[in-house]
Image (spheres, helix red, strand yellow):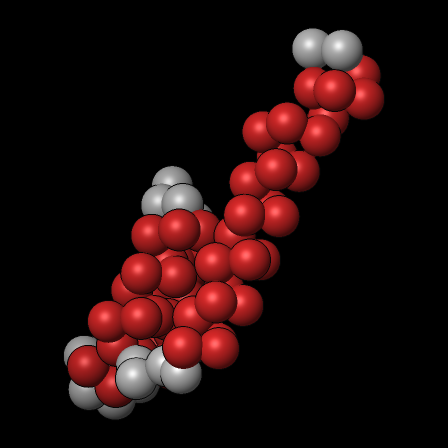
Length: 74
């Protein structure tokens, strides 16, 4: 969704421009939360979809920041 939003906003005309946008997003240091907020700004989402995205982000954050520390002790 972020790719499509940026491609249309920038009115890209070449495959290189598309690939540059994709590469910039894929190589970004921005967090998943940042990307979800960008999607929320670029699209009109239902409350249900916003809740699902928040749920997914919470689960992702739990896995990345807590689960492995609890399982492996660090």
